[in-house]
Image (cartoon, rainbow, N blue to C red; front, side, top):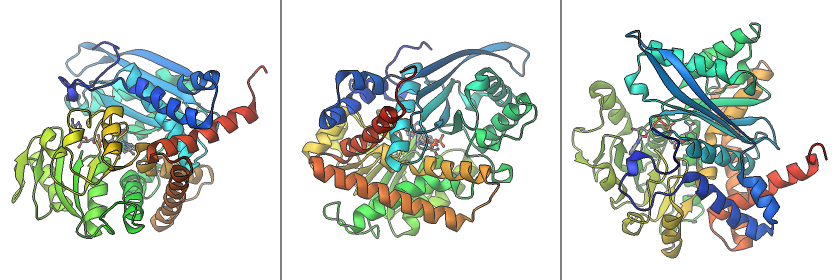
Length: 435
Ligand code: NAD
């Protein structure tokens, strides 16, 4: 696969599948217009500060040698060390990683978490790699990144197809290569026994759940006032989607549809996410769940529901399907799930979009809590972590709402205004070396 920007293959054939990095430039430009920033500033905010490209040889189990492309993009560190997940996926390409790194900068700034933005990716299909191959690839990637990552420099975390075990291998490799320095803070999302934070695994789903609950209970979503009985469809039942589903279900919402890459299931009575999880564990797929009807992934997005929650990949909601979506609001747990054209369509139809850089920021917020615990050699209770997360999510949601009212704009543009203002202020105060 080349580095040519553009779509991921999940949306192949769709006309509206913009280059994610170009989307970030549009989002920055819109907010920069409101803040009356100069052209120079806009250029500076769009471009990543550093791009690392790697070609990594790995000896496969059958003795053959295979090359893998690896990326780490460090977008901006004005407010603190670079921070961002690591994605393993066959469609990973440079512009996608650049976009994801930019979104991390804005996400950390919206939440007022003292980190900058980065993202990493390895072009691979982890489902086709053995555990040994996955470990070799991860350790090689970490070694190649060398001093470009570190507890005060750049701190990776899990993203699509990466998990706590992969973070443990990065932590171990980094520590061994740094004179056995026990550098726990080099990654977050670690296993709890290695210094991971309680509550981190569920944090992204929980953060989205908290914002949605607040939006509903404050009457910000027309016609709805609580999660009880609210019908929700969720695309993606991985780390983020599954935790969100469980929390929403426990709060009385009806999860009427869930899709994974292989397809989806629907039930107007509501699906029990715990039972769906057990079914996936037992059968290896979401399809054929007892009492539910199988549908395609594309059909899931068009199901009648109150809230649609994309929790998979970019560009899933586009000019083609957006006009047919009947939900009253969207909670973007995935990064970049909605194209600008789809966004426009929602705005015209008065559909509220709670944007990714706010809705899915619970993960990086608890990553920050993990990092703080690692440096202070402390272990917080899960209750403490969840309480602090709830406070941050609520504070940030209020700030974004207030800014949206002030500028008479969407929640997405308001979130960018808040974030860009904070990053620009940090950059201005630091000044530009050598000045
Ligand atoms: P994951 O690998 O745990 O799960 C991904 C899920 O998406 C799986 O259920 C997979 O089957 C599904 N999927 C993939 N392609 C799909 C498609 N075309 N249609 C439907 N489903 C599809 O990943 P995750 O960590 O849950 O991340 C999901 C999204 O949330 C990504 O956009 C990621 O960048 C974002 N995100 C993750 C975190 C985090 O803490 N993990 C934080 C912020 C944002």
